[in-house]
Image 1 (spheres, one colour):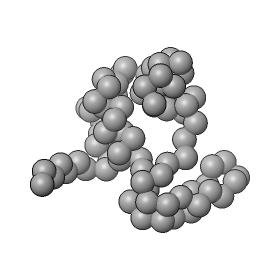
Image 2 (cartoon, rainbow, N blue to C red):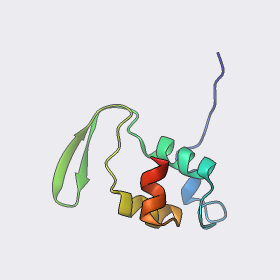
Image 3 (cartoon, helix red, strand yellow):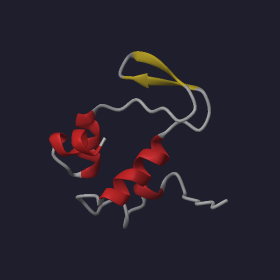
Length: 78
């Protein structure tokens, strides 16, 4: 079995997180780090969203801003 470790806040780092646009690998690791690692409640604005392990609740517009990509590119990537 192969194990891959990644610090969840890596994209918040002042050197790594500021480089835009993200590569496809960086976008993939961002998705992994944003996914819930256990069931939890997430506030999407004023709306509570119950997330199960592995789920995330972000719009494609939010991801486009975070990654420095056009929204259409984010949709195709997903």
